[in-house]
Length: 210
Image 1 (cartoon, rainbow, N blue to C red):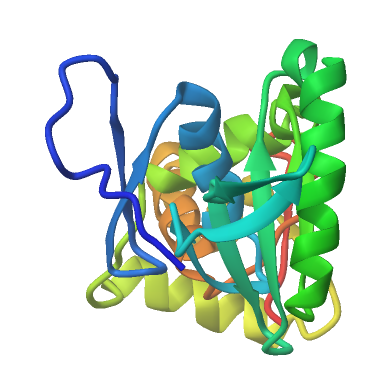
Image 2 (cartoon, helix red, strand yellow; image 1 turned 180 degrees about the horizontal axis):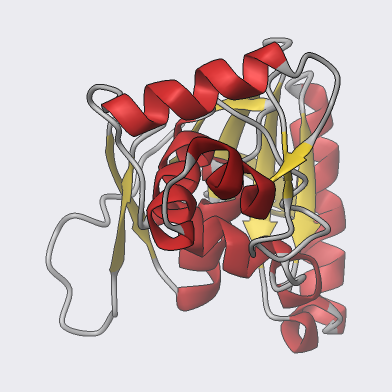
């Protein structure tokens, strides 16, 4: 095992720093694509934690010992772990990379874990990514304010009924802007739910509490 340190200054690399509320630390990324991946990990309810540039390992390729460091290591709620390699789609289909990645998958399997390759085709799916970036702007609630408490209480009383943000503003007699901003903060912190994978956030998005 060996570790790479992206925190060490390197004039030849552009390093991106993602401040993760879920991990309570900063995540260092080597590309904008990796940076965008962090938004998806941050708001995937099945992911407990994630880290960039975890401990690397050796793998054999063309009769030689090679070294590899995954882009990410993710831990899920069921305690399983998975490595992720992030690549632009044009590079992901290059013959040499495909051969190396196949060898890496064999080495990872021997560790009793798995690795997945993701490209911008999986990362830049909309409206999921834009919604995740929007939620990120409202991250890190320290304490619920009175309006947020009202929203959570009202949605709990609806039980299985889903209520739009527009109806919520009318029922609670607040401006749509105030409701939307507080709904986003609650969604970001996981107090309430909405289908942000398939529906762009707007006044009509349906909200509920599990």
